[in-house]
Image (tube, rainbow, N blue to C red; front, side, top):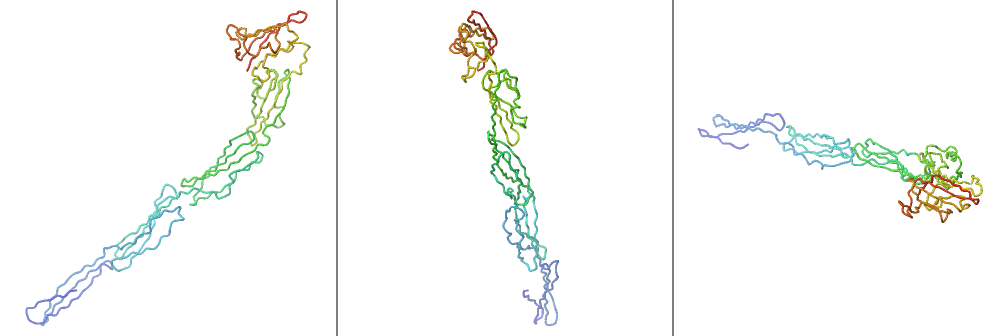
Length: 405
């Protein structure tokens, strides 16, 4: 309060007295002061003047600096809310309230927490401190049980698929997809690849693999069989061990049409050796049976110097049926052999056929349309054999000849 001075029309001392009266407002920091100066002269006459002072609190508290923004993995790492204190320009209690609000991300363990401290003074003025907490899950599930990644086994004792346990760092539900593939099969082994693909609710994925190398016990069984060229067709299943599965596959590199399913017909091949394989591919233990068949004529009793024509020629230098062989022809040196193709063109002719120097080996002897020395194409030909015995009696044979290189 300042000092004021009054004037009076008469001489004499003037006394002055100042006084404040306060009217409270709607909060402790808001009120009104009426300040009055009263002047009294020597005769008791008085006069006064007044000043009104309105006091109000409109300034919010000074909020402290919030903790730094952070990024954490999973909800378990979210920091606890700490206590903060604000300052106010006016006296009075400052209340503080902390609150978290969450904005959800693209998966359950991905979100942002907005942490707000609100400071309020006695007149309702407020200020805030804000911290952002980013929660993210970018870690894939991990294997929580033992897994042997490389396993060796025999086909009769393949280990079962192990039961694995997986955990997620955020405690999320784990989805497991199991797959199994078989490959790299050889005559004696194959590989089983077992794969577990594991993912959490935030699409983090991990893959775990077990490779089982399987050895096949006795993968190949060899069976020998001799068959006379005049024998009836043979069901090759009768040569396999009892109980052998019959859902396998029959094949042969050289039997051709003589093999139909499991039936081998010796009438449709020339004398020689043939390989037939029976393969069982399914099951844990694949197996191959290889049957080596010798087709012979030792069962045929021929009279001395009787003529037997072997009408299959395969001139591939393997030592079997490389030439057109006529058994007994050396008993009849006075002979003639002619061979015609399917158009009736003579492709071979010789006198004194002897199976060695004078012999048909699938090569043209040179005629109008086929050059001498040219290899004849595979196919069916026709032969005519004429010969004379020591008594001068004439004989002849004719028939089809099969050329297949």
